[in-house]
Length: 246
Image (tube, rainbow, N blue to C red; front, top):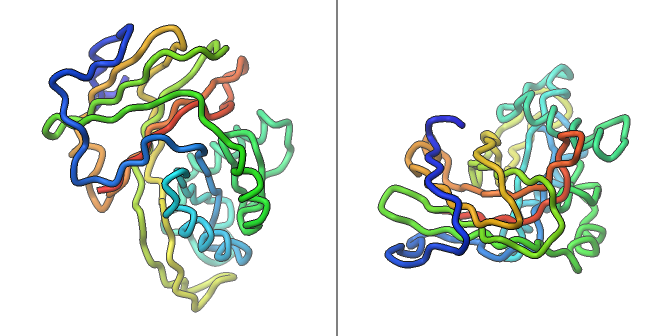
């Protein structure tokens, strides 16, 4: 486990005494869905999806995350937010779904439902009955963030806990490529996706995180994801999530 994380205990019940709730932050504590958009500044079909994601980010029931991929960088404009890790995550999702190709703008809902990111009606339909079965709680103790994930009555063999720092909003002037000349506003821009632990449905888990080390250099948002891991090690369905925006 990387040194920015201190895993302090595995508990049978949630720790609530002596811990103050997160203050002065916008917390989405009981979302019904995590929306993961795979997008690119060099993709002419992506701006409508980026705009939709920005609107959906305002919904308290939804956690939105934008992963900028790098495989369109060759066509004339290098996405300023792109990372090869984002492209690999998308390919891992595709392998889990037995799909041979990836595309942008692709939106994954709770890790299982695939929707074109610019098709708002399909997104609304897919999220109408969405749910996350695992509760994830956040509490603040000074500069430390306490994450508490209680046990749950669900059949899950293996689940991972991810920290996902993001930038809530940024504008980029595209100078070359398919979107040349456009000033595009992006939202929920993922900076990294860091594995910090495992979760068992039979035991509660508590993690403590130093917030200054995770939320710096323009990062103003943080999502915590609990995701089922398939037997082949690939990402499965999203089980629980929480996010904060300062």
